[in-house]
Length: 340
Image (cartoon, rainbow, N blue to C red; front, side):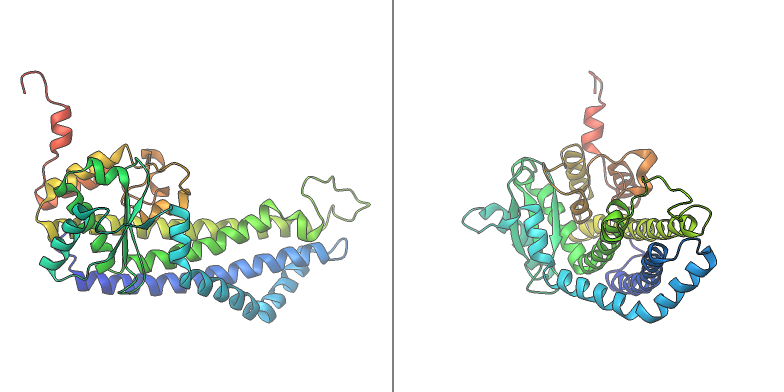
């Protein structure tokens, strides 16, 4: 499995995924614009307007207004794309760490990069006792790896090297660019869903909890069904964007684990690092959406794994054992009996 994915083939695959993501975004954005037009037509329609008429008006609005929606989404995307690093640093609390502050960390990453001919990324620290790390940056000169203080203090040199190699693989495979695009797209849908559903009575002056009677013209017409359809489209668009983002994120973690082994030739260190990180990855006050960038996301439950941004550590370790010949030393030691 691991050997089947070479670096360049994975880069090409990520380029294909990005193109697929862009195409999917166009379709979902059109659906989103239509749903907003449907809401606008619903609340501006005359009492008793039939559902078919409201739908027809929304279709006309879509034909005339799709360019405005795409312009607004493009502006959102450009701002988020060019300022994403500041946003990530602000959300995670990461700050630069110098060689004087951590010569050990610099020695590990420089030895790893120089021996493999990889440009050395910038290094950052998150002041937290949690064990976690992530990569960021869109092009050479911007690439950074951030690790928590806890990871630096708890893990051995070999384990830190494996974690850094994991993050370097994300950079080499251009996973960072792919995830930035996916997160921005998902953010657009989340914003519209929040604006339209949680605050939908603000722009229209109409509340779903207000009783409807024949006097206000809202009963026995098509407005109720139109609202249901609009909300269903918004919720579906947002949900699909989230599922796509999580599916991409899960697949990239397996490949980054494999890339770490390729760089370090030490699957045991990658496994032991994951085991130590497993139950200590939660960073206090960290926004949940940011964990898609990290090496591990806290508390993946079996029944909701398809909604997780990461595969479980057990699954990742199993893959490393099966395909890279690693040994789960941490788990084996924990289950040893009194006689070994």
